[in-house]
Length: 184
Image (cartoon, rainbow, N blue to C red; front, side):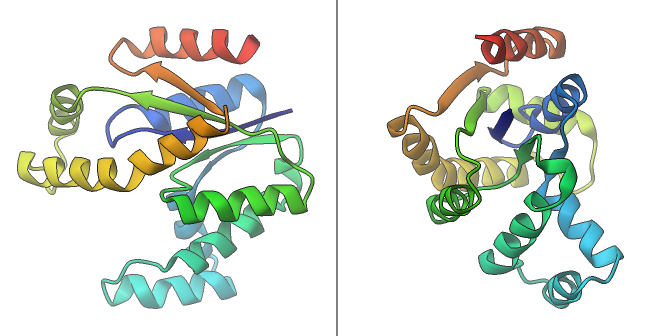
C-alpha cells in the first residue's frame, strides 16, 4: 500500500508528479487546495466554514484544513493508498497526520521532498505567466516555504521517512527517479 506525502517549493513540480504517480499507482492524488475548493463548491459543512474565511481574505485555519484532510482520507478510494500534496505544511500538521494515521492503522507513509534551486523555481513560476507571479512575490513565497517547511524536512528525516528527489531535471527524469525509489 502506497501512502506518499509530497513536499517541495512552489514550482518544483509536486502537483504534476503527484498526478502522474497517482495514475500509475491507481491511488488518489489528494491536494488540500483541491479538497478545499471541492468542499466549498459542494457547500459541505466544512466547505461553508472555509468559504467564510476565504471570502474575508483570511487563511483557512489549521484545524479546519485538518478536518478536511481527515474526512478525505476516510473516503473509500483512499483505503488502498494516496498521495498527499500541500499537507502537512508545518510540524504541528505532521504530528496531527501521524496521530490520525496511527488511529486508523494507516502508518508507513513516505515523504518525497521534490527539491529544486530557487532560481530554477523562480524561472518556472515566471514562465507560467500568472499575473500575481512577480519575481518579488515568488521570492517571498519561497522564503515562507523554506521557513515553514524546513522543520518538516527535519521531522521526517529523523523518522527515516524522507526521500529527496532532484526536481531540477526534466519531468520524465523526475517521474522515472520517483518510480525507481518507490520500487525499492
